[in-house]
Amino acid sequence: MFGTSKICSIEPSITKSWSKRIFITFDLDWAHDEVISDTINLIAESGVSSTWFITHESPVLDKLRKLKDAELGIHPNFYSTSKGIQNEEERVDELLGIVPEAKSVRSHCLFHSERLVDIFYKKGLTHISNSFIPHSSGMKSQPFSIWDSMIMVPHCWQDNVSFKMNLPFPQKSDLLESFHVFNFHPIHIFLNTENISRYELSRPYHQTPERLIEKRFSGSGTRTLLIKLLDILKAEAEYLPNESIQ
Image (tube, rainbow, N blue to C red; front, top):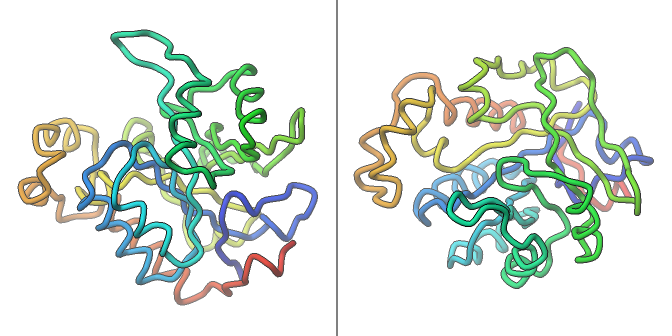
């Protein structure tokens, strides 16, 4: 059996905190509130644990804080095409001002450096999910600690990268092995994106949900993959409270 949990609950030295567990995570990426709420509704119906990496202030954060067993982390964007590298510490402070309870972080575009680890530690963050190891690589991954006991949490599947690499989605039998961290984006769930072209062509409507919904793919895409995963978890998973793994 396998269950779900939150990124902040992972302790590498306590195997049962991550082994045979599914971690469903979301990068908000400045999506419209209705687009984010669409994903929230799917998760609320499933009852699974989840981690949400926040990019901006929004009323939708109140919904997330009320969501059962949900964790709010931060998703800082350290790079701007017009300004180059932004001040990393100021960017982290800005997001922690919005989500002061955050313990987990995933940088936009998976931007990472030794300096950032030190800043994250200084600001009280404990878990970093900036490493992508494709499930299809055949490499077995697991969380591990680095200096200052910072915990690195690699993820095995990411929707936008899967478009570029044509990555297969882990099957039900795969979920029984080790641990799996999934990285989804609400915009791709809303669109049911199956390739990068659909996303790029829909850009003019990203902040107009009533028009964006018209661009949703009707076949197998990101949304159907998430729903399939949630159905598996609802039917097969043995949900354990986080307290039982401490």
